[in-house]
Picture 1 (cartoon, rainbow over the protein chains, first blue to last red):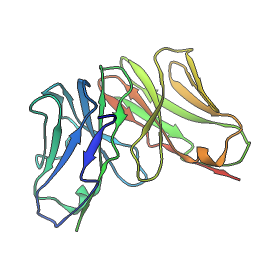
Picture 2: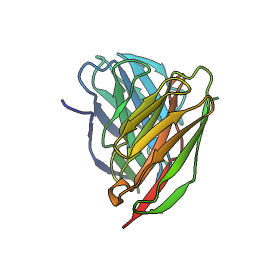
Picture 3: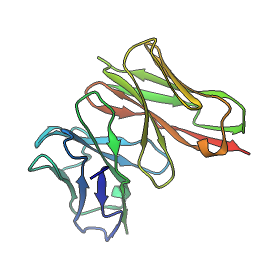
Picture 4: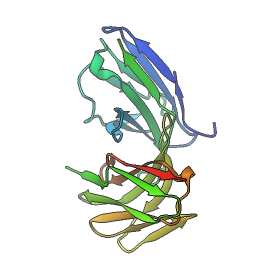
Length: 113
Length: 107
């Protein structure tokens, strides 16, 4: 596609429910990033893939958060047993190579009630 | 640990009133400094990449500059449509974003 696509755009989850957020990066982009953005804050790094390899997951806040990119294209961020503090916008970005500009999707707004 | 700070937190300008936004960074092995614009409810939109001190990039009313410790985004004669949050990000090991500057340009 022309840009980074994320789905769903909005997700409301009951506390304790598992959720899966999808990211479809720009075709041919090697690197893929996940960020969490709280209201009024800058994006906070969660994890980074180069092709199918997860090279950095230092930003994942707990073991309830899990990300995968099994074939080196589409990625899924999974959050188990959601809690209210998980409510945020989750952004996905991709780039061609490590030090070039990253292009962002529109984000998924997760609200945990 | 890589860190990025931005100032001011918020800025209100009259249309045509030029100003600058600041981004200070502490990064070991900077491989790039990026500026993004973010509108409410949308993902960040790429503006500029700067790779070395002394480098400058321009686009319409915006100009980005880079020193060894800071980057500036200069806005010349802004218009109301320039109102947005401006984010800078350093790239060392990965992209680290600052908290952003919320710019409001009043007609």
